[in-house]
Image (cartoon, rainbow, N blue to C red; front, top):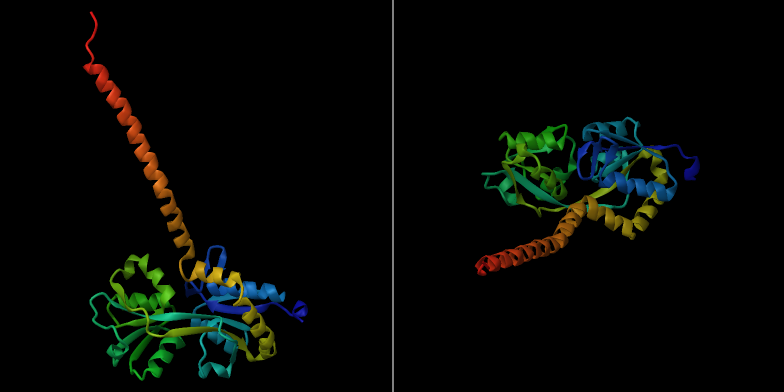
Length: 270
């Protein structure tokens, strides 16, 4: 079936690290790597298209894309997408300016949110919690957080793994995580109506993938700082060796200094 199928045009957000983003060498991130492995298992050819989230959804509506990665189910999107079984879930975090006192969901009532354009994530959470807010949307999540950092808005709601991106950006130094456990976000793959007949096989392979060690390795690497943790572990292992080396050098130096001092104290012969 898949061998004769043309490459699926696969869309993902260009600014949603660590899930999807563009590197110098091309598309990267957890969603990209996951779908690449999934496609490989099915013998499927795929072509990645990264753009702002709004443009990705618009491309799916226009029939220019076949697959959408990192999609969240919503009734509005059912008009042009069919959703697979979940392949990932993440905690949502509340991000606020440093001096803000906002912390709990009820604190957000009637406040203003900086949001990614057409992002269903915060809307679903706020609607389910019956919390009315006003929202100003931006083409990318980075831009939304930049505007929040400038003091123009009260808060943002983002996936917890995205927080690591804030830690390394000086422009976000005045933002902080007020609550890292608002709710759970579930990611799915969106399949356009023209490709709906592919859904059963995609779902079957998702279920198989979730049981593999490759899947756990991907989550550890991209979503839980596996590479950084490993590096920290290597540094921790190397520290005892370094301390032993330094201590040994000090002992040797002390040994020589001691003998030099003894020779100086000895009477010289005439």
